[in-house]
Length: 83
Image (cartoon, rainbow, N blue to C red; front, side, top):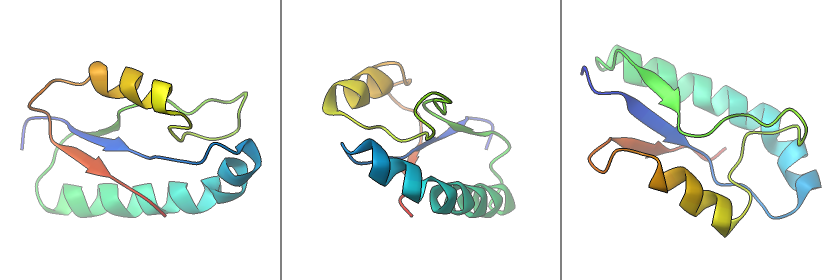
């Protein structure tokens, strides 16, 4: 695949829950990325950044989710990764 595959991760409204779950999420995203690479995806990227101030990379509100999806190409392949 030459089209980028975008990973998204929906989290919780509670900051503490997102911080606790973040290490498992990172492991899951690495495993999914490896699997996609084995299937031929040459570019796998997160659709939204990790926020160092919050200590996680989850979509943590409906408003933020709308912002993330609005920026993605309409025909882009998206994989929702939930640990």
